Length: 583
Image (cartoon, rainbow, N blue to C red; front, side, top):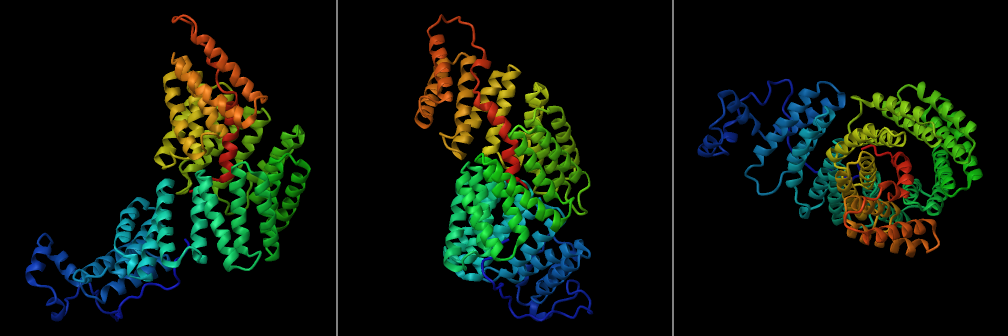
């Protein structure tokens, strides 16, 4: 997690008790300590405590005890021994700091620090939900206006809370926490401090994962401006941020801008002697060339990276398999199916026996990428088998924060089921994906909108038109917000919604929506574009239908559903795989 300031909050000078003496929590406090709290307030405060709890509470108001217990908790964390004892020590330290600071008018940073440690121990034990209220409390204590130490405490709390939400799969809440942390950091350090650049990048990565691409791009631009002011040319930090910017540009369809950033990133990485980093950038350069249809240059970039990865990491490293999948996809796009299948088989051999220590989720993601290539080659049965294997691998063993990856693979499986005509299986799969993404806080992402659109198309095939309309309408709202009203995905949903309206007899609504879509496509694509001609024909049919008698026969949806949706559903999984979506 990025930092705010290098100093840590200073605790008051205290002397730790001798660890060889009996536990301070069990010993009687000195009379001077007891006299600091009036008997009447003490009696009211501890009215409900048992005798044993009463003695422990009295011991915790010793100002020497909190620092001792906090240090002990940290030592236990560092050693990895007895995390339960570390949790108990941190909780008692927090209570001790709270009691000792009860009469103080200023917030206790020692208490904030103890709460951060307590939350970290809960997270280390996999108890992320328990950590959330602790961190929320820690954020409410410091006042950033009281100085840099308070600002650091507030910043750290926001960022740690964001990380915890991310591990729970609540990406929207995570981004909200990161944004608040960034605001605190900017207020304390200024907009152009190098540490602000670290946080901007951290937030941009989280936004890119849920397709908040314009916002992520603005943050990375700010990072690059800070590097230009404070760092030497071609720095390692600049190389890293340009790679992220290229990924965002690629996802937004701006391949030329992505290529420009990648070339500059490659120069910077080479200048710093990062050969494997250069190879990874070559893979991204190959992706950009592929997106622009410059296939020979793409092959060269992929082969160059493949050679470096094999030499540096071994034949069975996942990075080798990833490049092989890229080459397989390239060859299937150029009609060289035999070469494409050969590279798919080579990649599957890598995923069958990966190097020791490889995460199961990464292997499953690789299988999903191979499945996407088989899908594009028309081998849907093999694609379904690989996706089912990937889901089985991740079932019950997915690491915290990577639940979205499972949903992405299942969405890909739903698309394949749709393509082979297994609409019942497709519907059930999309229903599970939608539920997971809603529970994980990803219901506002562009990918979620695309999934809703595909689920709507599945409902159309099952003649569940009312549900399809609801799904298209929700997808429309999300894609308008995330992609804009003129984005092809958004326009595709408009067309599908218009078709569903017509099937329900809402002809006027259908005509109004198609007129809007046609106007936008004429403006953006020109009147001679084939997509514009399709929209004109569909609108003419609706206008003609509207002039018929009221008992007219409903128009078949197959002639009205947007053909662009067929392209959209094939691109769903590739868009997901390109950005990872591992929270």
